[in-house]
Image (cartoon, rainbow, N blue to C red):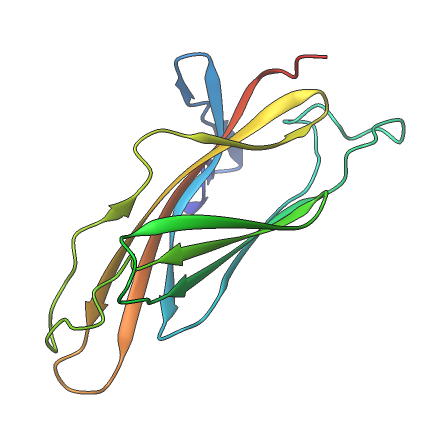
Length: 158
């Protein structure tokens, strides 16, 4: 049995899973582990799920860049820095505890509910994410676990 995300191949037969939360469909969800200060990039490309795989669509790829920064003068926060119409950087400020002892784990910090991050094929794209940190007892290494879900929402209001 081979599984990748929500599509599994079982003895040559395809099985797919559709997950909805309220009126939103989850189009991607997962956990990404980044080490030390690595950026996390998520690129969402139009396809049949978003209903925008034709040439007439004016929406292109959406890209989200997540960076973690520390500032002792600020409470944990999320700063959104639009780069252009399709790319935004999310600066996650003080979302991890850099003072944690080796071998420590920080509780998850992040959003409580999804936020609207764009649209594709005339439908809203929403995202929810949380961050948790851990460190190694043996070596000077910090790992960040980035938990995310991307939702396909209702139609964009005109």
